[in-house]
Length: 397
Ligand SMILES: Cc1cc2nc3c(=O)[nH]c(=O)nc-3n(C[C@H](O)[C@H](O)[C@H](O)COP(=O)(O)OP(=O)(O)OC[C@H]3O[C@@H](n4cnc5c(N)ncnc54)[C@H](O)[C@@H]3O)c2cc1C
Image (tube, rainbow, N blue to C red):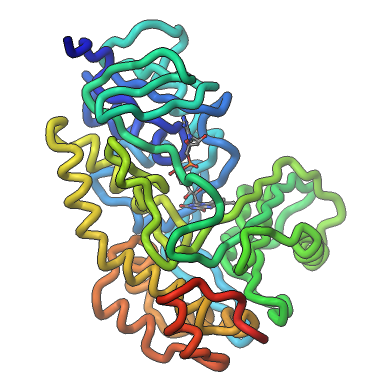
């Protein structure tokens, strides 16, 4: 006998994608009984997730906008020979804000499934058994009408088609004085690039609060803590900061894959990192995670798997292009020359093209405009060709 489903949706993974989906379901399907399962003891981890406001589809704004913790009318990029203000509104949602908003959907009291109330279970690793069942912590099974896999990335390395990596270390400071800028600097590439492409990312959250994040493009997923500390303290000194209290640290690593690496072959439709719903060339998840949440929450429940597959195949060419860019960057260009690719991107592209690129809505002509002029000095065409056959080691310097 088929068990009676206790929930309409069972969302496995309470990170960015799972929590955005819970928000979209609460808005579009207020009658649905939703279970959100997270193996960590709390939802959302420890992140600041930034995005261009142009990443957010108009129809998603009604449920997404209340999640935004910080907004700026534009941002800056700095390279040797180029400093540009990009007038695309930029914004951030934080783990704290998203966690709070998701917990508020669940209400105060724990209790059984009922329409319109999210049920959250944390602290147990779950196994997806079928499109309609999940095993909790190795024992009890839960049955629902639709399971959605939002379990994120399986492992930081070992991607089948090969990958480069973006590694990050971010320090958030409370200052006893004003920070000199009020808009973000998303790439500050003024440090010596001899050791490879690295930059500081700066988000002023308020007049006396700032996140400084060191980012490095690497052949391996390890981050250089010493170098991060050096560049962050140089920036604090340049800003004339005398006393800064470190209030939060975030660190991580994002693969920049050369080919699709997702869990799409699993029994349930997959979103977020698990399903390849992220921008492989920028590392930003937000545009595609919002799109996935809207898609699932608006779809006919009987057709979710089909619609997810169809939408994923519509993104196929863009994903392929993003993978191709990663391959170009890591296999064709010497580490010390990689920053020139980004300077060129910001130096030649108008804002509409930049916005479409980040939003994963770029057109064929946008793609052509991005690669025309590549590569600059330091190309290695034979290595690039070989990268289609096997994962290369670092480009020799
Ligand atoms: C330092 C850093 C900075 C970043 N900055 C940005 C940014 O500014 N903007 C942006 O758009 N993206 C950014 N990203 C990328 C973004 O964080 C990820 O792409 C995004 O979190 C992926 O969302 P997800 O829900 O698929 O995975 P996650 O957010 O990793 O969530 C997956 C969740 O599933 C849970 N889980 C896994 N397995 C199980 C299981 N078996 N049972 C139950 N739960 C399970 C995990 O514990 C986790 O909470 C950044 C990443 C890093 C590392």
